[in-house]
Length: 364
Image (cartoon, rainbow, N blue to C red; front, top):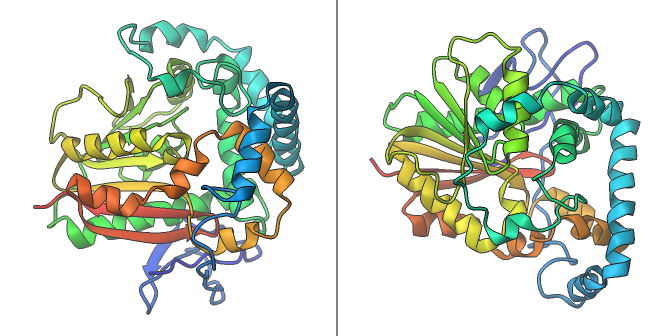
């Protein structure tokens, strides 16, 4: 099943207005105001994973470079500079957005949200995303939304604005979830949603807006991220305010069979394989019969990887210096992991040129 990504049409916002299923099973996201021309079909790539991942000689060389501490420090700084400059070239006001959060009273939310009994896994305490304290810092939390906006713009570079790219990326992802649940849930309604690894709540808010009658919960290991999420949510009026939970997604402490949809958006590539398995198993425990799990993340064997083979290994050395678990993510068979946890109806769909969405169902 292949998903179509419409080419932007002048004056039309794509991805979130109306959705349909194409004749060959692909989802088409189109504007309600205008019918867009037939979009180009996304193609599968030629390789199972990038050459710089796994156990290839290039991957081992990249790993050796990263493990050399003095060079790692330089790569980390260079990677950060590339990320920020790339975002700002796409009209994402990275520094301004971060400054607004850091100079606000967001700190007041921290103690209300933080659960002091939470035990952090060892992998979560390492430097990550070019932050020495990983996700456990105010700077990481302040910059998270700008980083999320960059994901959408890189995925849909032809979009005229970041907002348009976000509508396409998020609209395709939400439609894939909706279509899967409609097909396999046995007419179970989505009343309770859990967004695991919700960060500062961007994906949680999209879920809450697509399913306004449902009660949405955002869960994350970083109280800094959750403080920002709550700070932003307080500015929004909605029928069912989002609830934020500080917990480990592998052992949430939430009641079994208490959700109809569990989502993990751009989480798995940031985790070692053992953690991904734990997240999937916990999602199975939390879902009611007929419930849907939806994992959206980097594509493993689609068009994006075909394209990235041709890019300089230097760029991916910088990337891997800030993403320590990419190799484990690319080597793990995510679909089989879901089946082993007990899920059925496992489906993978390319929801934009860079990302896949994997959906599955808890047996009825």
